[in-house]
Image (cartoon, rainbow, N blue to C red; front, side, top):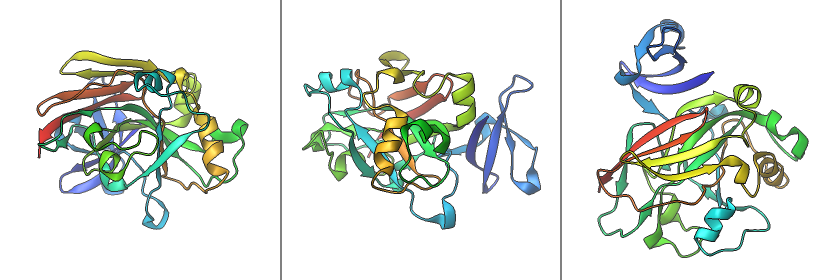
Length: 264
């Protein structure tokens, strides 16, 4: 099932994709409006993430250099353990939203990433059990500004924690659908287009550290809670993006995330 969070008619709603008639509508899950169908074009898309328990801050873990080809692209050796950094939730925006490029920047690039949404409290999880703790998957585009980069291994705040810098969505796809229908999270093709031209292609099977390994690694020393996110890194093929560019990051079976660059 493909789930979404949207703003429509002055309120925020949970919804699911209703393609039963082939026309691509959303079916609202809000109790008072349950079953009402809304056109895809008539909503504001929000990050498709469930509220965290007691509305606590969401932990967002992101991977650097988790694809060998991307590490090679940047002239680095593949890491021997996951290279992770923490992101703030304020950087997240939804499908069809706008990402700001500061006027002085010389190089700002997309990063198409599979995002893992944790479904239940995870602590000291074993590799073999790790996927049981996943609620679902979505597409993330974790923009980076190379002008501000001091350390590829631990990007500083201005590189990865910018407002509007991480579009995510449009769908949260249930873990069971990915595991049963698509062959699991390590069996998905990734692609990015800029203004309709393919600029990045990759595959999740080429991750250095796969999804179960990442969950096992993080939960060995920290507890992950429902709604927390793991952004799993990007393959090679990143290019500079300018104001006006339409960037589409897509993952097989998960969805197409549209984003437009604008000037500050």
